[in-house]
Image (cartoon, rainbow, N blue to C red; front, side, top):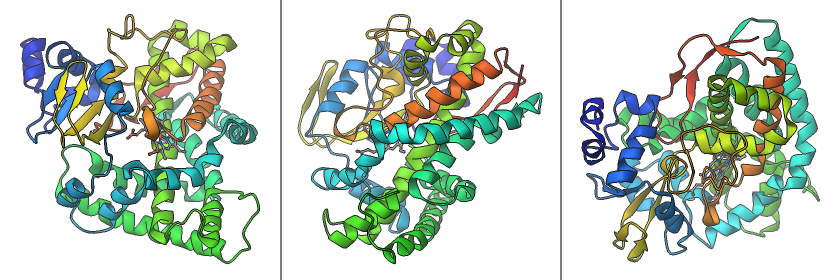
Length: 412
Ligand code: HEM
């Protein structure tokens, strides 16, 4: 759908929506595009035969439907061709159905309980305090490289027991592994994805081998140690490839989306000074405020499922064997569920947003994302209560992982 189509009116905009050829305006702000779809074409059939869902109730129905599959082996083999990228996106829990999904998720689950989060809180506070002290020296910063990206990557490196100094390599490789998941991607992006996955695996195998040489820990101190313990005990069984790809998945999940959450939320707070003041001064606003940031920003915007039978959703019928694209970015702005959905209000209640998904694949790292944003955003707002944009932010061109590439911020 072009910006010109948008200008002709919402109905034309909905009919002309083309997920495989998104205009620049979409990357700056996808919200109006989905409003048109929700109102005029809630089941939007894409040129490749897939259907895009944009209404809250339709999306929740599909997410909760246990007959839907996430395994994309066939479609991804066509899209990526043989190689490490295909191996990755077909062997992690994200793209596996039960029982393999549950077997893999159970191994890493203990690292994301509330008790584990409490153990991380002290270290996280130190990271945030150090970064704030560092940026305070400057009047203006590039927010993503100097602040938002530096928190989640350090924490996730700790959870894996790999050096924090490897953060930049992990970020770079991770971005190249994830980009090919977007609807329309070039052969160059796919080739770079294969090469990045190969290098990422090679990097992780060094660490996996190091833990293999040590005795099994009774209570694993990091995720690699836990994977090696499962491998040595044979319970639950896990292969070397599954171990490496699990690490890539969780390392990627652990930083990209949370970096984007902190960046997009800071932008929303700067655009709403009264909410920025609440985040700084009202401890009761922080918990609900982070939920509102998640709803408003929705850092992970699109998901996929494949139907295995005919599924009835409130807006219509989806045939069996159909690729369904879930636009949670749209569900979170659905006026049928949220009053004044485009208003950013920290104390919004209730707020049943779908930023973390729903059903058996609901985000594993959601307590960590909440913890990091819940520590970083109020500390930032308290230290710089009058912070302002110094220039228009530059958004990334990633329809799945929405984020800010560059944002110059004045710190007051
Ligand atoms: C704001 C931050 C985050 C957002 C918005 C987010 C969003 C999501 C969503 C929507 C899903 C569901 C995917 C689906 O249904 O197909 C998901 C799954 C997942 N997320 Fe997150 N996530 C975030 C942070 C994290 C963090 C910090 C980690 C890890 C440290 C993580 C690890 C995962 C994993 C491993 C899965 C796959 C779970 C499964 O398949 O069972 N995420 N995430």
